[in-house]
Image (cartoon, rainbow, N blue to C red; front, side):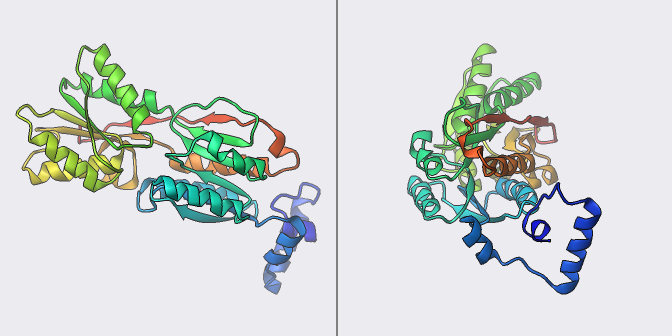
Length: 313
């Protein structure tokens, strides 16, 4: 009975027996004694999810994917918001080193792998949400990603195919903007066009609106704007509407991420499978925490993106 009640998977127990045990436990109101389990296993039975901005609509889908895999495996999920700042990321690592979680899924904008190696050396596997492939390494540091360079390149090719020649890109100062700008810039140059970057401080609607206002002040404004994230693009859309412009007739706008509101607003965007990224990250952590899992080399796991063609571009 204890095998069934304390483990998510029990292949040695017949399915019918497992089902009956769980039914009886539910009838009796049984609840696992988590403190006792922690003492026996020296584990917290918790995963941490470190994110840069809990208000960014991209991250709830990631967390949901993580929870969907973590819960059946017996793990709870805690969220740590770094506010996208270097000091926040340092605090997150210090917090994890206090033994708060058995494994972590994280978006780190500022800390490098060499600065995160302390986690795996202390037996805490890490899965990073990355913007590109990372080489395999000896530490228990894995990554999940879509090809941000190619995704941005494909969106730029789409805008050019729609007849646009003056295409600006709104980006933030850190994070995946660098890789997305790389893909956009390469396609623009290959087409004989001049890349036009405008940078604001953060991945927020306010930053997108500020950047768009600067673009609209130009004598020759762009005919299309590509936001390095959906929240930047949404801010740009609001600024364009306030200026009396019609989207996409006066100016086309595209984004990156495909957050839930993007479909409602008709935003053309790059779809990241955030739920699948979270689920894959969680499965990777579960495997890492099996006997011998921490000794395996780190791996980089790619998922596919999709261009969502809607009415904004």
